[in-house]
Length: 243
Ligand SMILES: [Zn+2]
Image 1 (cartoon, rainbow, N blue to C red):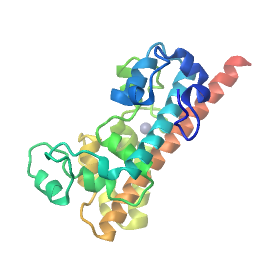
Image 2: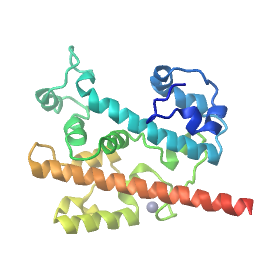
Image 3: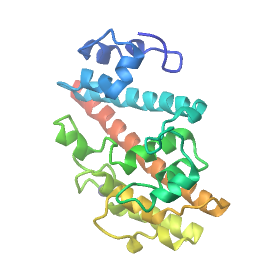
């Protein structure tokens, strides 16, 4: 394995996870292809392994955004023959059925660290590792939302329905005087991607861009705090188990 993760290599950073992996000699390209690395380790996961797995996931996201950042003109846009994205194409796509057309502008044209865009891009497709998704794969999970401990943690619950996150959005709405941030104005039972799309303004004005940036940064902060709570609870568990 090469030292591609911020100058380190996965086997050195996560020896237990490496030992657990079914395939240890993949090249980076092979491991990243179709998320093969996930398949290699997604069996008999324990809480400790899962912790390493999440940390590795974060690091890979970080590396992923660097690649996107430096090679943004290499991204392939599948809806055109030449693979090039254009704003006029994004506009035209809005009239095509069912395509999440506004994501390019709403997610990528913001002032936020690229890992936040990448996280939002995953979240909009419901690909973030919330408890419900872990549960579906029968991977270890905490089941409950780490904020309220009352509901199954889904992306929809965590980022818009939880009483705690609703109070965060309400506070943001009053600081910014942006009424769209008030949770009681949001349509219920829409997917998180759809809700994001409804609340987030498109357009290139600094206000639109600033509003999008704010939404993504709040979402990112909710996720970071959720992880802090999750991992500090894990730490306390293992302390009590071993004493
Ligand atoms: Zn909750």
